Image (cartoon, rainbow, N blue to C red; front, side):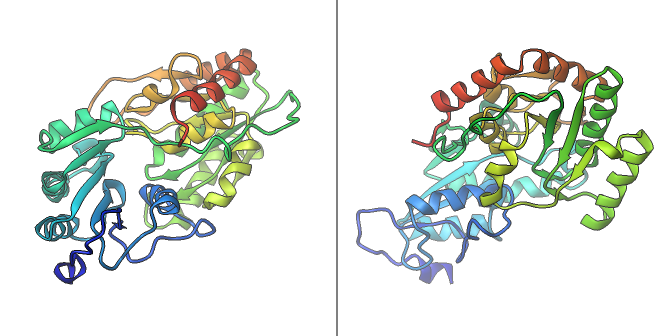
Length: 334
């Protein structure tokens, strides 16, 4: 099927295929790398028939992506790989090596590689090998004409802290709840909004129940607003409803959520690991230091995150201004 797909179109303009016959629309729930494809197809429509350029995202790769890339290359098509994370012991657990084998093959077939951050390049070099073709570091972009600070947003004594994204590990939510408990114990007037998909455990329902029970155990359940998965059409109002983004994932390669939040004027409190420090810089938020470790995760502690949050709250207006300015200057999609 792939051999037939890549017939030479004879066109000089790019006819891009993203590895899927259909990309979800913006009103549909999408996670991770699929969201990048939603953005890209606005500029370069998805051509499932007679394409001449293959663009694949490692965090949303189709089945047998390496085979697809090989067929495309044999037919004379060009190939670009957007390389995000890799599999390693702490993140994936047993069997991580088998995940990297086809990913390394895919990179070997690429004419050009877009690494999402310096951390992504470092990790890929370690586990997938050095690139054979051309490459560059290119961060996730944001449309700063769409992702905007909320107009007329008055200062309030209570800080709304947002935890969002796809929560693939329990600690991501646990650390946020512990931050809420530690922050309120320090006298911070704060609430926590938990939005996104619960992706650990046996099912999202069971994971959500576990999170709510932990909130009750910590005595903070009255200050938590639980939101489920959201679409790209819903993400701007969600960000604009908050004051601070709390990003607890350890070694996150290059989360687009962070640059979207910054564009909306949200300072970021985060685990200073992975590619996130490259995004936030020195003035758009405060990070909790963490070592570089591929063998074991180092989740940020609630007490440390609460301390970072307190620093941001004390200087919230300046941090918010710096976050917006940095997003416009460095990450605007244009």
